Image (cartoon, rainbow, N blue to C red; front, side, top):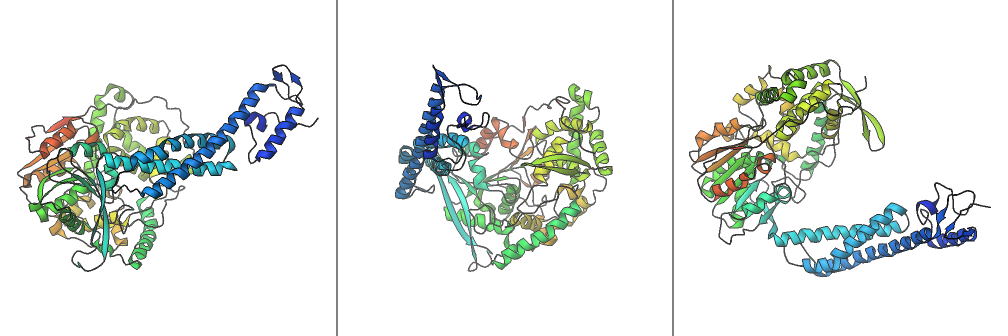
Length: 608
């Protein structure tokens, strides 16, 4: 007797009610044929050719459930059509209006319901057949629902997206225009407060993305004081025109240990092609620098109709904010700068990273659990670097379904160590990883370098042009390039600068731009004690030039988001400062503990 139901283990009757790609008519025909060969034995049936027993009611129930899922899948497609029709008729926009109630009624519930069942059916039947319709129905409905939620959030939070048209070269007001996007969160107190301009780190970071993601909570709290505005600086983000992201990507080879020299050889033709393409499109690349961005901020202030603004800058944003404060100080009420990058702090000094490593080693020596496994953390770091310099290692790497090999050398390790020191969280995990490396397990380093160094990169010319234009004074260059005895070489800390500046047509802003200046404007400088990239020394260097300046140190914070996410008192201090209240606190402590060392180190050792 032929096996009408398919094979025992791979049978569609045992794995899913209908075979992949099988039409509905063929399915019901097979079901009837199957019943013709099933001798009935009470509540159970025995399938032919020794196939294992299956309860008839369970089998029929699975058929009914499959049919229900198909009906719900069609409902998902219907929900998409209803939602699309509603969106078309209401013509919604996150830039204004209110339509969220209708959207929830017409789109929200059907999208969630249909999307869930589309996912279940896709898992059982694959993309073929009705799976395509379900993918369009459920997936598109969920996408439209996401847009609806974004609009609802913008309505609830009184968010407005605006655009500013400004000259690309401000010295040529009749010349080519560019478009800058900004996000505005309206004040909640009802008072006519001074607008707060947020300037994101980078250069190249998106202020709008920061406002809607990791800094959103702080943004909402600061709305108590005034409107909060996040600007996407020129050349950044897809909302700006132009956005100077290169159309191509570049990638460092997996089978070569990283070296700065080799990376620059790969970068040169890539960046030259990218710059050539933008120049052919009419972009004046030399206009993408901090001085032109200062004029963008002034144009935004005028566009907002504000007599004065509060500056809030993070990292490079503090560099931009200080440049604005130098030229337009009369239009600044107050300023908050954290992760401080002064006028001559663009290029980093290797000694600050050496000091950060030394402080971490001292802290590890005071921790009995870490000290037991790693008696001298600084010596271990140097030992690992020397071994990798003498003999780079190979590690197996899985990318998708492909098995590859990645080669790791000394400069991979130095780059990784410097990046770990940037944040307190990763610094606290450093001893754990170093101990694993000492045992021959470089898996964490392989994963990191595969993601951060060997994966495809799409460079943003704005970031390169801006940092090249800001540059460094002769004295600072000599200090950086003369750091021959430091553990961290200057070319690792500042990669790809300064060499990359030879590949792009930037405009040097000169030493006058980089010299210190004084201002009576009240300024709150904020630094993380763990931060080697914009260390507390930067703010201390600037503080004498600001008679109304305050320096707050977050003891236990690093360079980035830790500055404002790890202390509940942080937002309160910012609000007090913006309201003109006295700030007595000069240091906030954030508790830190090392991650356990030597636990679970059973990953495969590197290949020879």
